[in-house]
Amino acid sequence: MANAKNNKRALIEGRAALIMIDIQASTFIEDSLVSSIDNMPGYNERMLKARVAVDKARACNIPVIFIQEVHRPNLVDFGRKLDGDEDIHCLEHNSKTDIAIKEMDFRPEDYPIRKRRYSAFFGTKFEILLRGLQVDILLMCGGLTDVCVHYIFFDGHQSDYFCRII
Image 1 (cartoon, rainbow, N blue to C red):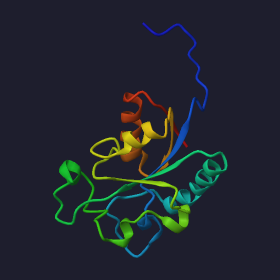
Image 2 (cartoon, rainbow, N blue to C red):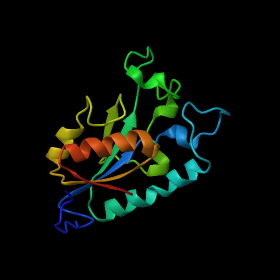
Image 3 (cartoon, rainbow, N blue to C red):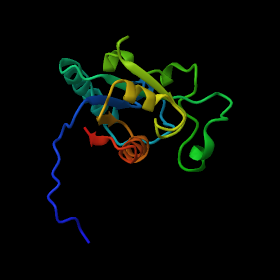
């Protein structure tokens, strides 16, 4: 039976954090005809627009958390990710794996979280940071909404955060 109550929620509830998901240097480097993960045409231009969210969050004193996918060169932490369409990507010590510092205006007061799997909640210090910041709502922006953004949203919802996608 459907819930008969009208449970409309506010867009922002409580203390927010902006979660920038996997906008990394490789997004803006076009030196290869083949990408390890296929993107729609115009992907890098859309990711440049994400900078607006970073600037607005800072203007509103909303903390900015950058999620960075990183894997060990010996591939030990990829798990089942390579079973599908993805090739080897986001290796440690590769400049393409770095956060897109210039494009996203990454600053020392921002919070970087490195992840080895699709979700930043899995095997990282992300939840400790969110609790320390007393965050209630996750404003998410990033690439590959069908994978990493999806998993972080799902785990955030399951962890009782209000989740919004920008």
